[in-house]
Length: 98
Image (cartoon, rainbow, N blue to C red; front, side, top):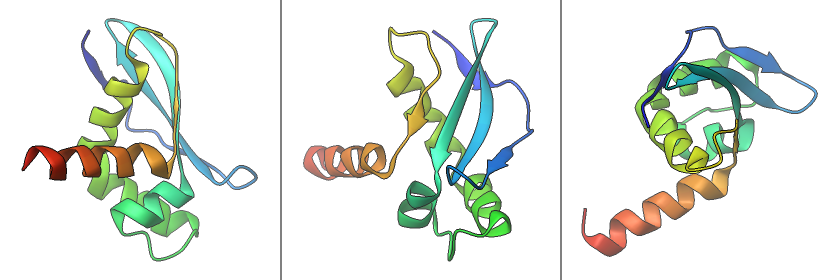
């Protein structure tokens, strides 16, 4: 499975406090999102204002894409990345000594 960003277009959804983006999984577009909480907790967004969330997304692109690939797994469906996803990754890294 190869995951990459299908486009650099990000869509901010203020009602759900998420940034939506599209990834390409082996030629198939999947719509995914990351919550404002995850961007604040793990990628340094100082607030839930759109500009802050977009900047945090850009800083975290590689980790966000890796988490997306892991979460998609065998489902081949879009995902919503919550803060807990990144806590689990950080915890696993610490336990393995990375």
